[in-house]
Image (tube, rainbow, N blue to C red; front, side):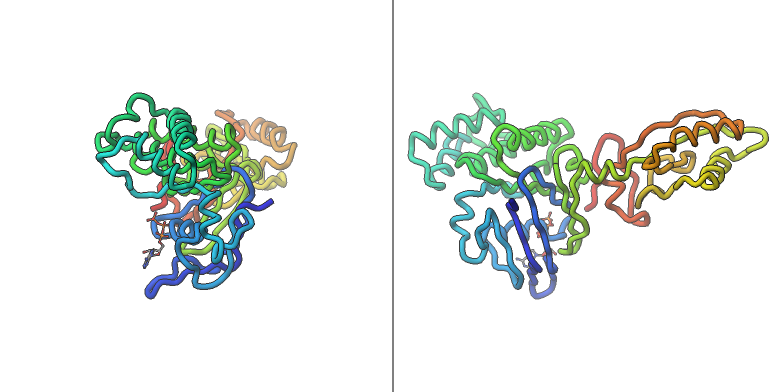
Amino acid sequence: MTVIATERLSKRYPRVTALDRLDLGIKPGVTGLVGANGAGKSTLIKILLGLAPATEGNASVLGMDVRTEGPRIRERVGYMPEHDCLPPDVSATEFVVHMARMAGLPPTAARERTADTLRHVGLYEERYRPMGGYSTGMKQRVKLAQALVHDPQLVFLDEPTNGLDPVGRDDMLGLIRRVHTDFGISVLVTSHLLGELERTCDHVVVIDGGKLLRSSATADFTQATAALAVEVTDSDSHPDGTAALRDALLAAGLRVDSAGPGTQTLPGAGRIVLVDAADEHAHDVVRDTVAELGLGLVRMEQRRHRIAEVFQSPAAAPQAPEGGGTDVR
Ligand SMILES: Nc1ncnc2c1ncn2[C@@H]1O[C@H](COP(=O)(O)OP(=O)(O)OP(=O)(O)O)[C@@H](O)[C@H]1O
């Protein structure tokens, strides 16, 4: 089953092509949509909700055509917009009840669902206070709650971690994951932080300048690029131990430093030999070669590429900050 399908979907504004012949097939689960500012993420979401017309091509959401079935799509899909859209004088409870009523829920059900949803996103006593006094994290939670209150099958979350500090970001990513695991709701979440989506999503779609760069299952992709990182000491007979090891491993038939695109950008790559670990004998060959060369083995560890490294061209890639995501804006 496909929850979102697009076929040569394009959106052209007078001076810019926001989407350029995009072909997508997104399955149930949590999918990340990554791209720099202006890549076309928000435009895609608006077209999928039936709120903006495409210039050409086709798109369907939950099997419904975006051109003709916008209202039905919006009944079944929740939407968390990127920008602050909350009236400051109203409490979270009043606001989310209102959104539930707009989505067609009767008064009692709207109040019950609002209480449940606000509890789920972690808003308790504060839910009766005017939202003007809320922190950014609380506002993002209200925006998430209003997207979920009518029990949709699918939600579009546009930059839900924007403006949050690292702890707030982790909390929000955890909540997003639970939207799927606890309620079975599929999620399309946008971000310009690649590292965030690595932890949260089953599948990642990368767009740039309105074009599809890549669409892959997160697990498959990081496994497929698994590499052994090996660091050795120098010795009197091999003043550059790293180079000697690299040459010897190549001669032994292993793929070295070319385990996948972006390997050149790995932090500290100058002192580390990356060996393609797809060959099951790679560990043994490395151990024996290091011993034969008389080098000291500092470390040998299985390395999974971070998506940030994999998706960027070596020339454009900044070094990924430890523990954070690479900002591709
Ligand atoms: N209504 C509009 N009229 C003209 N150009 C537009 C309009 N909306 C978007 N664009 C342009 O289309 C391109 C894609 O914009 P879009 O907002 O979809 O990008 P995005 O990936 O969501 O980025 P951001 O995270 O900054 O919102 C940008 O160059 C933007 O300036």
